[in-house]
Image (cartoon, rainbow, N blue to C red; front, side, top):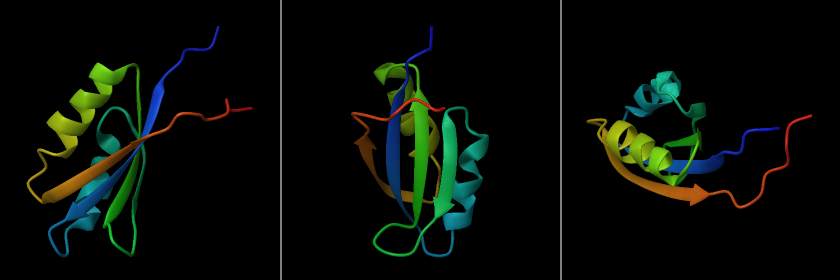
Length: 84
């Protein structure tokens, strides 16, 4: 049986010139993809968690506590097809 998880896209605004620091957050458990982007946000992280409590911990305790993070916006995926 496949384990279910919650996937979220975290849009991150950083202090100017620091977006590479949060991209290195792939080292944080649960962060599967982290990319610097151009536009309204500085980075987009794809986070996978076992439940909402775990997602909350990853976002609030590990991502938002980063000293150069100014703001985050979290989009929780309501559907994602299983990998092949």
